[in-house]
Length: 256
Image 1 (tube, rainbow, N blue to C red):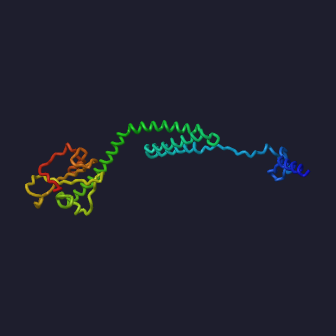
Image 2: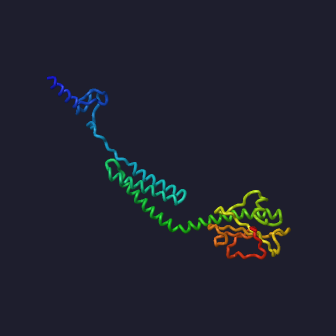
Image 3: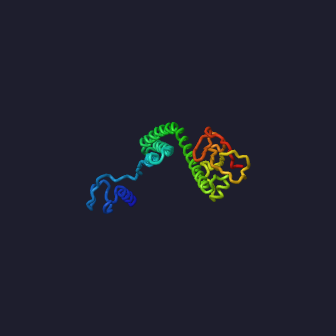
């Protein structure tokens, strides 16, 4: 008898639930509790709810927006960060295919991947077409930096000449007067200085009273070797090419 009552009580407990409003036990299926609370639907079962995660797909969209923004704001070369976008969108696509119940955004990730691939192809073609111009700009910056250093060097020579009425015999004399090192070219090579005398020197440099009224500054250029076609040459404050350089009469080298 007791066993039968126990089974009935257990069965009753299975058919009852606590009212979410007052906590009193009520029978499943009733529409209203004694406290006045009314039920509008069946209670939820205990099965776990699956909510699709859109994080990977949205991350790829966000990365695409960031790469596009910084490329437009700073430099187009930052657009090569699209590699990260490609990886992120492809990862989101794989997750959505493998576990569609947990990961969503397949179409979003696919669209992001497609847009990124097309944009990367366009960027690649643009970069290849502009490589020669980029190299020219790079060389121009190197030349401009070297010429600026040579102008600074020439200014020191002019200051020396105003004081001593002649250009210095060599770089040692100049550095001794200015008390600091002389500027180097873009490649950190020393700029070679050479004084020039307009008269034929029939004696050594030790002759007193000899005056140097012209000078030449020469940078070895990117190859680091003097006398080649990429040398940067200044004569008396004017830049000339190797083909324009003519050996003047009475040139006296500062390296002697």
